[in-house]
Image (cartoon, rainbow over all chains, first blue to last red; front, side, top):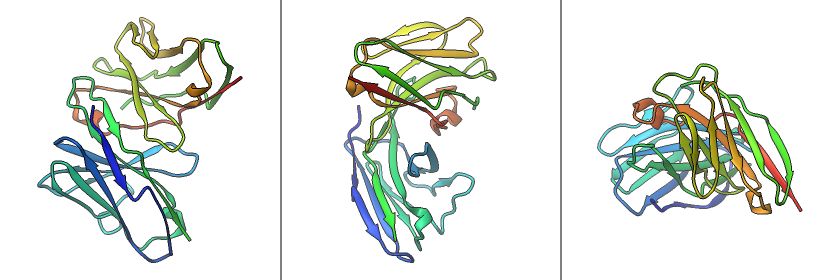
Length: 115
Length: 113
């Protein structure tokens, strides 16, 4: 299994500022995914990040608001830009297992509160 | 990806067997059924996956009837630590679309002493 760490684990930010969340994996992986989980809700996929190419965003999410970097096969960042209180959520990254069942491993999440 | 429907919440007591049913009427031929578990303040964790009949591992069993339009996750003799949200997902694990997991509302299981 893959071990995933995220930094920061939580943060409280002011409206209008930006926060960059880091995701580190203990093995090389092709695809990494970023999800958002709003309080008491299910997970929603933000984007898929492949190393060496632009991230692919899901409907409702745009690069200007959630720029993603994927500089190598073990690391990715998600930036939440120009934050508003509606961005208060838990942000999680995940990676595929590479197994036939396509099991994904998730990081512990970053809890973001925007005041 | 097929849409899934689960109960919003369930309550149980320690030592009981818990069965959570998921409906997926539009499941496609190549689709598998996968369940994830999410504890508070953690990311989801893969529990079990199956295509038809019954699958069992050290954590749970998954029962899938012949028509595959529903499935039941069975947790034997639950403990307080099984309190979590359980998500049912349906898709083709070999299809590129399935790599983008689509989570439904999930079932919030509360186990009491």
